[in-house]
Image (cartoon, rainbow, N blue to C red; front, side):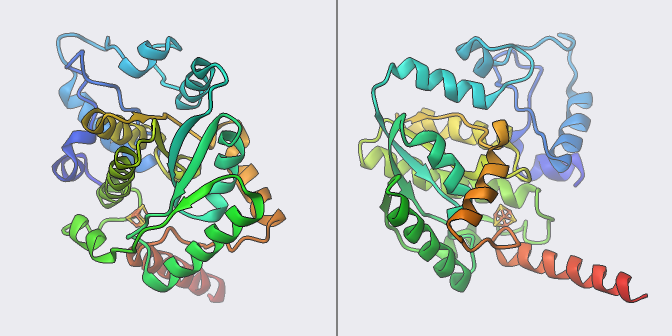
Length: 273
Ligand code: SF4
């Protein structure tokens, strides 16, 4: 996606490196990285390449490449063994498995399965697996909520045509995390977080930036994460096999399903030629 398009759709997620107070958002997926690089070139200010990463400064773990996994570990250390209440947004049972395994001893975790982006039949299937997994492991409680599919279409209006990894996904992350932050505040939780960062296809930097921004507005702490680190994604695959969890082959919304179907058809065509 062109940087201009990206900036127009979601300007608040772009790194404004000419503002020394702006948090660095390191966008790791190819889509985000290319857009961010072009944007950064245009914005490269008199200050040159020097900027302060507020996240990294807060956790004292290096200034240029924020490591959200280390931030999470540091936050847990700071708790000193006290099990704080955490509301964890989960996108599906397989993704939640490795995240919960990591969090369950440090936090008193409740899972919020709020995913209006997922098509309804698929949503029901994934939610049932989430409930079964939590029942079998006892690693967290679950906070129920409605599907609210219309909210996703409202939120992503105008970005339907964009590929996975573009501005539609940022709106999708924001929608789900905003509800998680609101539920966390209403329920008196100390932290909120998401399993989304376990996916190698999702940019941890953008997700953490959204979480941080929402936390400022709601008074509940955002737990930074990059669950794919330390083999988190591989562990989620292993746990999915161990618990025989249904593992979908597309992200969740109808647009990602169609994208996947087109790619499958093209591959098939290629094989037949
Ligand atoms: S591709 Fe995934 S993250 Fe992006 S909008 Fe669709 S469901 Fe949301």
